[in-house]
Image (cartoon, rainbow, N blue to C red; front, top):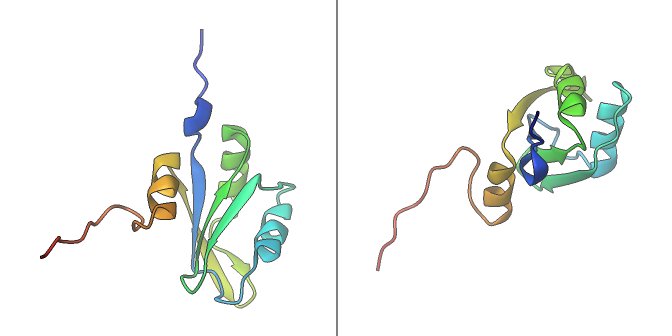
Length: 103
């Protein structure tokens, strides 16, 4: 018996991207390990992207590229829960950190 992560597969958060990085640049970065991302969510002017892969095995292979260079910058990779990606796409910040109300 085993369980499959289903829709809650982890994704990879990339930090330290060159500000000029495109989704194509990110795809090229992962091609070093023979991987093609399913989806890439690039935060413009943030140096951050979230990248989805189709399996945990691909995530593990992709994580081996941690601290590899893209252009002149080294890129940090973090395994992140899919729920973090959803929160960021909804306008939140990675790792939580809510703001106060007011009014």
